[in-house]
Length: 217
Image (tube, rainbow, N blue to C red; front, side):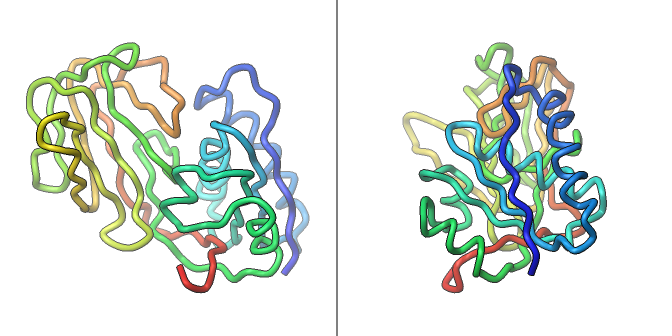
């Protein structure tokens, strides 16, 4: 196994387009060495999951999902919780010595990859009007605070929910979440898109990704 270590670029603007543009040469340069078969994504802070997602999205675009990915963070993130990953020195050791497993790769119709959490929201992160389906189940029709989506480390691939104060925050598993309405804004890993779309869908890519995880995960 030959690995390359990737660290986040110094960005003032963490929009999807800016992050993609910054990650593209980082990943491409690493893979220019044909011997590289593992990328160690080393990131800290609240944008760590966004960087990991952008790296995996670039591998997806390049059709190089055969390359293994290891994730090293200084503290817990949504993604480390989803995939039961260690953090700190234990994560660094796992990245060097661990084995990779295949997991469903959750993407959206903008070719971004979800490793932690996404939300469908209204303008400025406010209430969302429209309707949302998880497979054949209607999650809402009308107005809600948000729709939340997370990947699963197993099939059917993802889960979604509409946060509600009174009846709780129940997750439902499925293959796809689609939200439509007059103005749907997508927040990926805490980064809110500046432009609205009439709809947004998260669903499994036809090829899984390979993530280094503890043997007990």
